[in-house]
Length: 80
Image: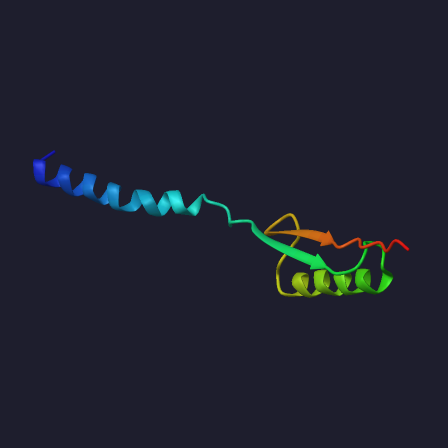
């Protein structure tokens, strides 16, 4: 094999290597934080969370596959 052909072959392999490595990477997991101003167990707010999840799924976001949602509830209790 001539030197020029070897260098061309080696250069082509090096140029294609990053493309092959990128093809094996998975999509990055996105994180979303949801802060609710009421206590966890408020039926109205749980309905809104359900609609939120369904809307995300309709847009192609699947929980635990390409999105992670963390919910935080205020849980405010009043003492008299």
